[in-house]
Length: 296
Image 1 (cartoon, rainbow, N blue to C red):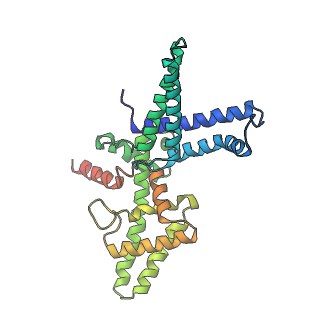
Image 2: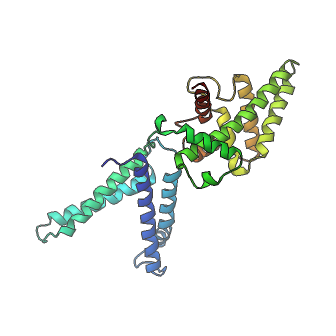
């Protein structure tokens, strides 16, 4: 049985939450009374343990995949695994003690925790979605519905989560095209006047119009404007490096006013756009599909 990277990370998160619930149970079962022999420091750590574990589990759940790191959660799971396995081996090898089948359980638990620690350390990236998985016929149908404000099929995931994610991403990419085209066209017209300051002010005005329409939790939706193509100097939305650079500077100025930064926008964008890494510009694929249908 092959466990996917996504399921491995989910199991790591569940183990952290499970230990958090275990310590929370201990707190309630002890009626919030400090265990005998505990110092003040140990008591504080004991009370904090469930909330720390919940936090570690949440952190692993939300952090960016594909980067190996020895985190606190990795160390905790490895420690539990080693201690448990050591205890189990001690029981099994104790010649003065009649070994029961249940005595092997600590070893099994230990091995499981060591494996979880390894998965936590590896933090593997979710498997890529292959292009054949994208049904552009269904994506186009749902894309048109979303663009028309008909969200029932999207909300009900009528065509499945993959199509829903793809259609929503394509709809947002189309909005970004509108924004970028507005900037590109206006800048080209103003550049003929040769006034550099006017051009910079124009870019700020156009980008601000789109920026203020987004609530504070959605400012990341403009970030794709500045993600360069895999083999290019510009994104899918700009064709001039200078215009993109000026637009990016304006975006950073707007973010700074809201006490946000570009790194956070990148993290939020990829966290909230499941297909973005594998399909950075679904609208382009959708356009190609439409053209092929017309030519076919």
